[in-house]
Image 1 (cartoon, rainbow, N blue to C red):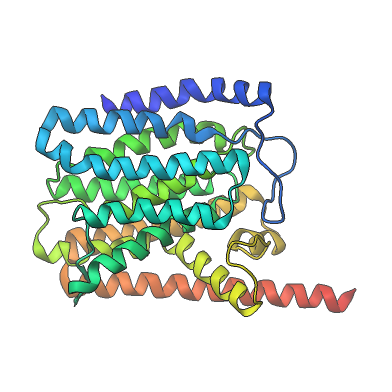
Image 2: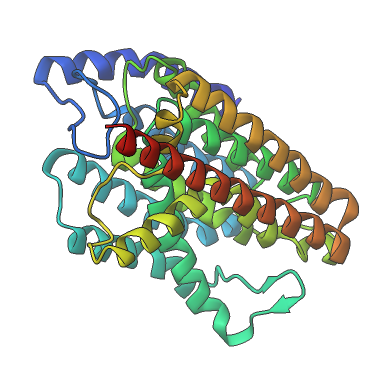
Length: 342
């Protein structure tokens, strides 16, 4: 029922949000990083984030008060990320202010015991809290940066939420319904965000999705130790598209001695556009790849488990690194050929 309510509220509210944005001219800003033109409403996150923030505690309250109390700091931190993102959608906050808000939100799960404990055979020990903090900051920004093509951030997020929902359900986790509840809202948003998009989710939505996805491998479940062994490694594979795109942006801007927060048109979707892909074909191409990674992730965590599963996940991540390398050099060669021809 909670999933249907989330989907229903999102589907019904988005047209109202579109009308409101058009009335007050709350349109997405256009800069060097954006690929769209025209006036597109930008507050699609209002259709799925608030309903999740309300429904998820109600669902856990129905299960058990103790479970609810352990979850409240997490949803509170996510709400902070959402609010900072919404303010940024209106006023374009400075990079330092946005990062400060993200840091406050990222430290909350760490304080309340949500820690990454291992990456496959590597036990993190005392480094776990520090790595968890960095993980939250990185994934929040990764999903923000990948939100550059119609439905891409929403579709990638939905696929990850579904996989985690299945894994947590099989593991008997009390939190298993949460990815499906959020997924229902995201699916309702995608009805209006598919190419050609009638509305964008904005920074509030992309950063909130990044925060919740970063938290998913930290939820408790009753998975076997062999399956828990690969839970975080699975997340690394599932988030490889936005994560590697962010790593590439960091390296590119460091090499060019520019601020990490300076926009450019060298992200994965920009390179695919220069290679001749349309918005729809980029979305379809990357979703096919993401579907393969999702399948391998489920295989590695639920059936192969342990070291065998870890090897599969490492292979999937390595394949994504190779994919990014091929796209980079192909795009670079095309740019050079066009420059030489001119």
